[in-house]
Amino acid sequence: MAGNKNLADDPYERLANAIILQAVSDYRIALKKIKAHPKNKEAISEALEIERFFRSGWYSQLTSVDGEYLIKRLQDEVRQSESIRGKKNKSDRR
View 1 (spheres, rainbow, N blue to C red):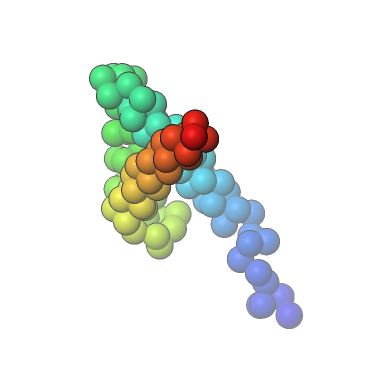
View 2 (view 1 turned 90 degrees about the horizontal axis):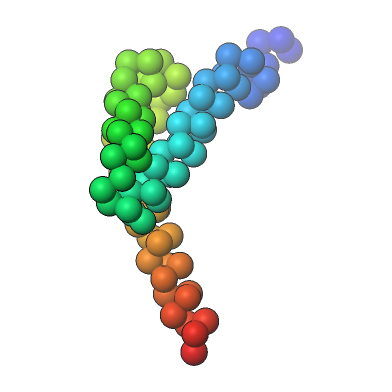
């Protein structure tokens, strides 16, 4: 049954997933910093660098997930989480 090996058990697959997950985490952090401080040059630079990674050939070697799709989803997620948090804080004050 060696041919039925789970891809998650493949160390290269795990490494690829870890690289992408770290980039996703770093991108979320950069977007949140930009949301809080829109002129934060360091956060903007970080976000742009990670976007370049998501659009790179290396990224497409690591995964079949479309980089543009991932960028949009993460931007939407951060935008929605901030608006949800704001709504919760307003309802907590009542």
